[in-house]
Image 1 (cartoon, rainbow, N blue to C red):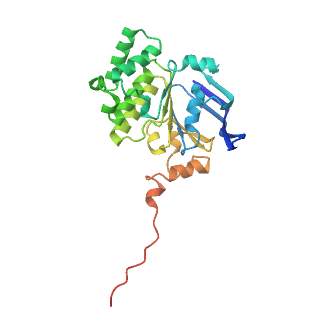
Image 2: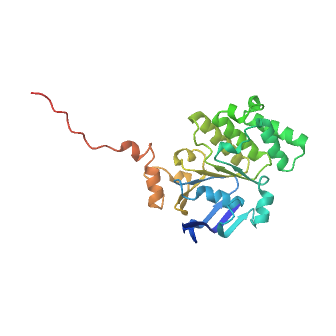
Image 3: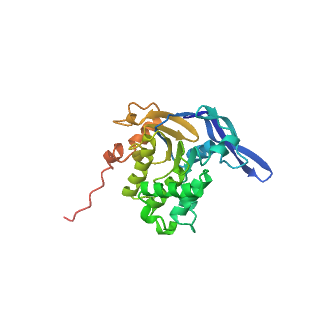
Length: 273
């Protein structure tokens, strides 16, 4: 479905106001996403995860330098093709809920997304109604964003991403700030898309919960993909993982070595004789 070959993204910075220098935020990254998979890209803030999403979709800021190739369904993604496929065959579920129009009701937001994908207004309305029912949002169809819970707002964004029947769905930190019930509901919705034959790129810092839905996991650090492994490799002490960083990330989870950490003994309080 999606192949990334030695992708490098550089952004400018200015150590002095008259001198521009370039920083590599993604460094020679290669990745392959298969049809029907949830592929999680995991790493700390600043690892380059969101920049990867923007590079795939052609949404990087204008000064960015991009080298390497990205292929979608066997054909190279050029800027022209990225623009044509964005919102149709490729869709982004953004991290920020501010992506929702604060003055528009849920049903209007999903309908507009369907219309931008090329559907007529009647067909777009029918599509919006169906998606709102699918994501258990029909009761919130007339609600504005400020009237939605975080989980409901995320599901509106997922419905908007599906308004054009996208084959590739990129979800950028879709579970951040959600309570456990809403988080599981959003992740289950993404897994359901993969079961339908779509490809889901899940960008997250939350390895623990990504593993509940992911088929494969790529661990990123400082713009580099250190390791790509099947989700099943994250078990035990991480013996099946090849990079020290991925192993440390796995062992640091509360369910693993973190829970067995023994703090140094504290000195006893003095007692009066």
